[in-house]
Image (cartoon, rainbow, N blue to C red; front, side, top):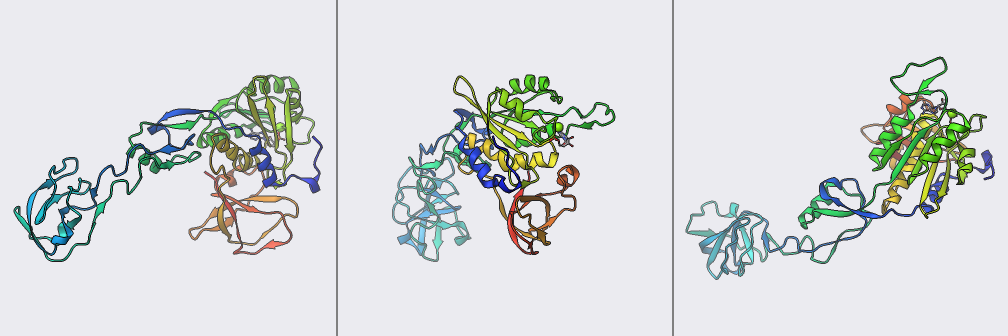
Length: 405
Ligand code: AMP
Ligand code: MG
């Protein structure tokens, strides 16, 4: 891999394209409906029944023949939800009916109960003409038997679970969850709870990315932190390569102790790019390890600075995880936002600036924009993407905004 200089950095969108091109969708498995939230459908869901399965009333009222209205009609029985009236309705008749109950054969309209406040138990007087098909839900008016109800790659929401349950399904085919290994590098790192010696800091990337991975539907394996020695890197990275995705943090910059890329190369990882035209997150490295049995591991070497690590996760790792699960739209899911203040663009790199989002949707850049300022990141709502370019973006400029979790 040749080194990229400042003028030759890989564009953010090009980097994402290279990553997604390496993705082979994971196999499918049946997932019980209640556990399918946030999973991705691995095949189309075809309706086995009509919804509603029968002609149903949309209101509480009386099933009638519209041609008999206005007029006085004899109440001949009741159709309650789950307990249909079992004879056909004829001229001059009305059947008391509840919402969701079967509309008897022969009836073609529902008179709302509010129209007949003086209804007795024997008869009703309908004073206005009721329209043909009034308040009748036709069988299949929501879903027709045989229709594709949910398509492959849908990320399952509570509404999708409701739709699948309405069709009588107890499980849905979903892509298997990607197995992700997570490993921090750096001799200065200690786990929270340990005592810090001079020069040491706590490892914040592992807990942070672990949490981020859980929101992205990954099955995470945590590895011990690798000290900055070739031996530790080799030992731990070799084991961590046995997953669908490996994420290491730190050790991808230019320093003499940045060993991740060279050790990855020794371990057979083919690097596809290093350094992206972005700020923070420039030193991101991405490669693929092909295993003898044909499996592949996507390898992300994300920079050690915590803000850079989370930005790289949001822009690249998360979409890759969604694509592995066959997502129709793997993201990142930017929405439009408006800058509350002017921001100076960087001539060569896209900036992902931490912003707070006001009630009116305006994006307020936070003061601390350096890549170690994790507390500022924690008080932000998301990232505004200021694309590389010349000059100053005025307040009011519409930019891409990426909500963070
Ligand atoms: P590196 O990319 O290894 O050069 O690290 C860049 C900066 O991020 C250094 O200040 C590191 O101490 C810091 N850093 C690296 N890994 C972590 C981590 N897991 N948690 C917190 N800070 C880290
Ligand atoms: Mg380091």
